[in-house]
Length: 206
Ligand code: FES
Picture: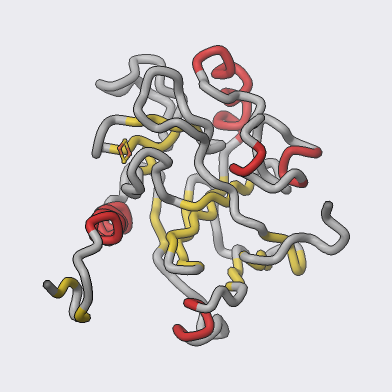
């Protein structure tokens, strides 16, 4: 059986990712914009499939916006978080399954060094693999701080409609949902203040 214009076995996980990613890119909420752009200097498709790093220019990224690109066939989210979102993150710890990111495979150590609760190199810029750790759907970003039907104390985060897993704006998973782990933080570093390279650790990182 063929899906998405190429012949091969049906990959339901991949199909879920493609469907969900399309939905997320199309969803623009108040004050939140998803920007699906991949800069033209990125490597060829063949190189990306082989795992080549991908470079992102975040100079135009505004607070509350998300840049979506692809690395190794996975959606990568780069989100600029507001001060209100950053202030809310530590208040969520007692509702989370792994608030201190003790599952070591879910992020490189260097994103915990300066900002353990933020899981990021720079406080305001979050970089995540946008795939739910339950069965691989791509969650929706719901970044507004306001009551939601699935959480009256919602402080912004990611909601996976497949089986209702929830993550905060650092990608930390809530207790009591099917997803077992925090969202993955990919290896990355800053080439300069506005350029992130996905797929390569900072020089000298342990
Ligand atoms: S895939 Fe996200 S909750 Fe099941």
